[in-house]
Image 1 (cartoon, rainbow over the protein chains, first blue to last red):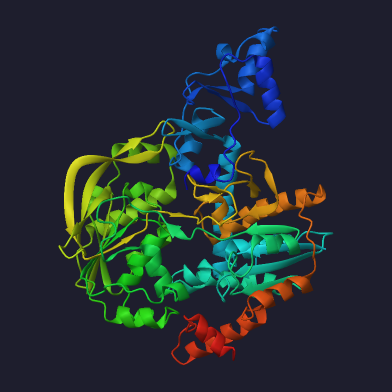
Image 2: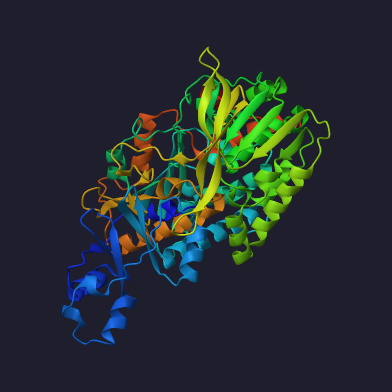
Length: 143
Length: 457
């Protein structure tokens, strides 16, 4: 299974912000959409960075005047970017190993979605549940 | 009373109905529509005839069908016999479960030559799908290539390698059984673009290929052996089932031919770049490029072409490189993913990306063609959870005639020859009866007219 199947049922609505926006604006976007990270996009529509709630918490502990600063100052620039054809399992590996919670997905240079670790775990769980169910029906176990 | 129309009587349609009936404190009526007279979708027309046990899942669907709130309207087509507007006038909610009905193309020269087919056409034909009964496949060819290593590709090579005696005890269509009896196929190639460790087939599926009475299985040692990147990944993950898969394939690579009438060759790290024209607009071969693996940023090992090519002489080619949904007129579609534009099953308006009132999707038309039959169960549960949230917030359609009698009157008027669940039960019993003498699970009706005639119409 690849991560396109996750994006297919996410409505491809991607909440993004720009590096020059304030942290305050970014926070209201996170709260409004009930999500944990924003993709920071550049002029070309590519992923310039990621801003996660983690990034904000870490910086807030150091600097109480954080809210007026810009996204570009604290965002993670070294972002691992996925492609729709990426295997679910490989992405899960990379995310757990490198402790990343969100992977922006890019096709032909354009941001097409974002996959969270929650999405990946749910997709794998559904896959296993489905396989168990199918095996049970084959051997005649009432699920 | 909540009235729901479900469009498409495959696994996703039945699981959606099942989850709807499980809602406590809410009375639900489900009318399950299908454009074909028979239910079960790909369980009937996709699952291979030599895998009857997988079809046991229909017992669960029959249980759903026995619910008093359930009705089946077979042989009623959305867009032809009834419109979305009709449905909006009779139901509070509409769920599209129409599946992934078309195949992806390889996008290579020669793809449309004669004797180059989507593997799903062959599958639908041997499974007796009424729309595919006129299809012809030239089984006088001795070499056949099947592009892809997913479960459809594996089914196709297995059916091509089965002996007549093996097929004769299945519910394969009579036409296909007769054609395969005359098959002169001797060599079948299964072509994977990535390595053995990345192949999508499951271990039971691949093991089955090594136990065919009528075909020797072969693999090429250099192609089976995982490359350094795959080895590193396997060591890190310790993924036992993939290690086992590689081990099974190594065994195939070591096997000496035992003289069975057919040979199945499993190839890895090759991609078709062109089909070769025989000069009469037919396929004479398949040109392949050898691939190496390369990791993406997120860690997936992807195929990258090298500059090494070869040509396999094959007179028949089946492609199985992916599937996509077919848009339903009037329903927003996401072209890149090949699915209905949706969020967790709620159909979205294309511009605002806001949910469209009362319309939902489940199964392959919602998430794309992945997973096994059972994967549609949690998938349908997610859609039904959204439907229930919307019911609780009173976000539903406001049908002018929300009653079962009015919907039935509409269907009777638009399609007098529609098939009810009890009609299907009669057809089912007749098919089983027709198979009994020959020791087959059933002999399928493959013409809609034959089904109607059998019902005395």
